[in-house]
Image (cartoon, rainbow over all chains, first blue to last red; front, side):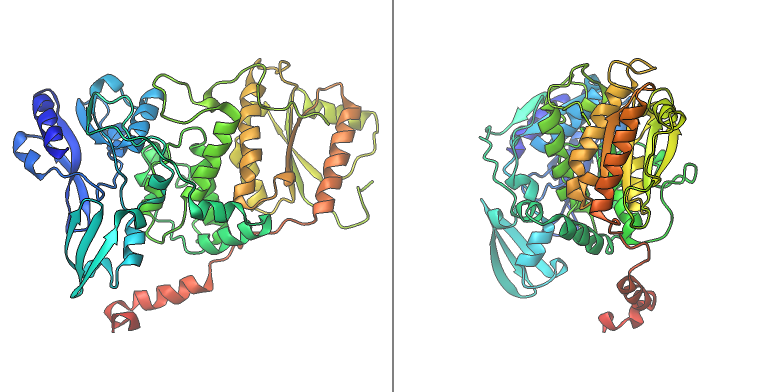
Length: 315
Length: 163
């Protein structure tokens, strides 16, 4: 798959300022974004279950430039959504789409290994198994055991609206996510207690916001402006929770569930619980899944005089 | 008149200038008895209401939030409440996941002539909030554990976890 992709990129690189992909990072268990500017960079390109980043996040910052981007199924939805909202110009972007077999969750991997990720000496993939040497112990982990939650419930493994599609198309087989089911089953009061306990961990580093492909306000984000002052500087569960409410509500009907917020969280707050819940609402109300149809208007930017699924609230 | 004999609760009302605020005024001019728990904030249009206004009120300690605007198809600005309807319904259905009781938030449509209807809405909503009681609040102070972790971290390599 990677060779086919390299050939496809090499063919188009001349017309593009850069192509964004992944390369191996600082150790055998991390990939890192790669900016391919010339053919000499191409040999560093890598794919596979470590390519966790959603590279569409870079695109709004590169608006106006001719850029290529390598995307998984979920990332391709972000590209479509950004284009639908006019945040990027689709004709400027060349989308190299993958048929994705799923990516790992580093949190799950950490839990599956006998020592911290930093002690990994070597790691190799054998189809869907990872063989690693960690602090002197040889271990083997199956990909399905450390698959990111978003991949368990994935409905779009194959990149949508790609200019070049690489790999054999997969049939989606979405499964329910165990942690979401457990959360949904909680009584109301326990959900609030859960968020209070979880948000107490938040250090308000804004990594979730910065990693989000659809959070495009940058310096104008209302979480950090002083006028209007939406959020105080205090680090309390209530304020941290309020910050997440800002993020979720600003992404209502826009979130493509790429999971970057949850992945980037340094204190492992399960942010996708909120995102998935919101996406369920917009899907049931407006039959809308963000970033699946090019040219579609996000549901909260439009209306119907007679709403099919909203009851006119009679008192 | 208070909806019940218990202590007054804090209910925040966001009312559009053209219909519901007028409706509340009509109810007042007609001297309809209403519970006094509601604090009204006048906004130009229900389309002006950011769902975050409602969440901010609930997080900051409001026991209930009531939003009211012109009836759909009757908006002073022609289409403000059509957008509002989508936003408010989305928020209402989403609230469950946040652990905030969706019953603490309600939205409705009351026109300027409907003083009686306004009285009904306020009385019913206040009764509902009184039945739910004061809202559970998220803590507004930092966790002690956070300070417990911050102190050794500030000690750098002298921190016990580096030993």
